[in-house]
Image 1 (cartoon, rainbow, N blue to C red):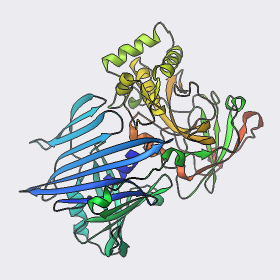
Image 2: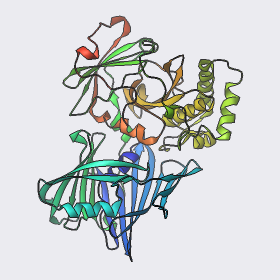
Image 3: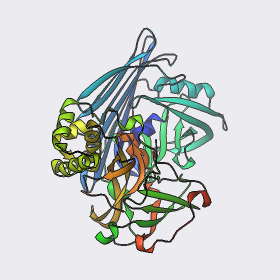
Image 4: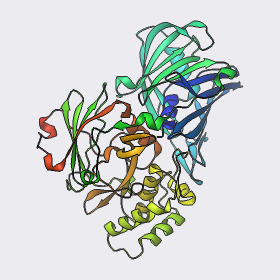
Length: 497
């Protein structure tokens, strides 16, 4: 289970605290300590530098996974962006993004992922702010209950803007980790057009110093609270995020059942939007009141889904399909295969054995890193297989979802978070799973993407709210009304952004 970038997204969606020197926060999941956040602010002349370092620890099937991100922003005292720095470590290699303003107002941006660097120019998005700018906007609007406004937060990891709707709730008396009880301004923030139950609540003082924050995370309550360094750096407690993300199966999914289409009846709690997607192998029908019928089966549909987008053929920072070593590797594996289907089968088969070290301590590695280390689990398989497909000219994408496991992490008969590859062959999307060695009808898709980690994490947000009520094999399927007759249509194949 990879939840690190979800935490990072929470950090990017709230204004950074303002500090004279340094400040610490403890990080908790449902009351269990899992990390620390250190925030430093330095003002020199007409510049303000804000630095945030988040250390986050979890376990996956009893395997420790330590993750770190560092965000740094340089701004004028009026909040004008001058530079940014973002370092994330989710695997054996550091992923780095830096940006610096040029005399013409554009930003020169360098991204390094999997040891491969690229430099490009960025036109700064209108109204986008970094840490100090976000604080100044918050102070300008004040803390009167009922006040609403919109922040444009720049995500320096992705170089994208998140539009955040802000509401001042009022003043609360808040209990802090040191035992003090203080009056703070309660502010609620939500990504524009996102469900209400994904909102982030923060409590700040008169100057915009963040003292406490609460955010949902995979059915848990993620809390950050200000305290001293000793409190923030106290020993962490174990919490198995993989176990928390598992969905109990209503029946044993024996091999004979997996090889035929299966109809799932699934309930989704809360105000979650439809978390499932339609693909050429999956049909979703909403029945209302958070109930969905999801039909899954290889070859059950044909030609219903749109064809590839440009992002399904192009290299990116995580799917480095133009790298000469990766291209040569892909061509060697496909050999004399004549058709795209034959090429994908050879790539899938070879990769199933090539990644020979199960790396539960790997958070999310790029294709090039996995090619070099031969370590990882399902996401490393999916990202590398997608890159190899694109390297030989086959459009491909990464699918995020869940898959059945007879036993995983001490649990039996569960659906667990998973990723696999879909390739565009003969005018339809066909799935290939090198981690499981085969695609079957226990693969339930939640989203697709170009291979970036945040696509995976975004699709995983609904897992804590999903319950599979029934699973009926193909021989017992009864036709149901299509989406147009059963309420709002199901989501398209692209899934969560």
